[in-house]
Length: 148
Image (cartoon, rainbow, N blue to C red):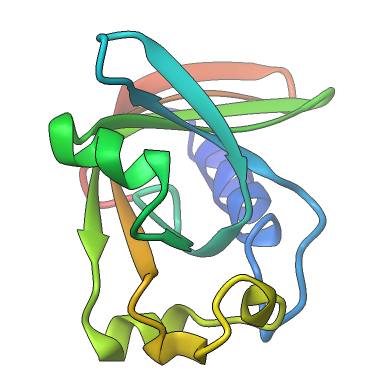
């Protein structure tokens, strides 16, 4: 395992998440399996991350993403640009408790959820990585996410 590449990947993922209500400037893709068993990708803003092991997203309970997760919670998250590619593979859960919804809320979500974090349609997707494939700074590594 190349610690330098892992450290750089963590920095890239952190920079792509919303911080204090300010979007980092990079979207990512959340890939889920649809009802017919095919992979489907959605481009999203990551609300928060914990290294490369956890990534949280905000969405609506009535979205196609939530329906797909209920049928099959296996997922992949990809952060990509011309100089890097970070693919995380794992599982995603749906969180609806008020404490999590409030903690993940950021400016701009009010355009989608008029009742704020208490909106009954608002939920948080919690992705937990099991493995990774990282290409950064001319290093390509893959492995299992243990306690990164």
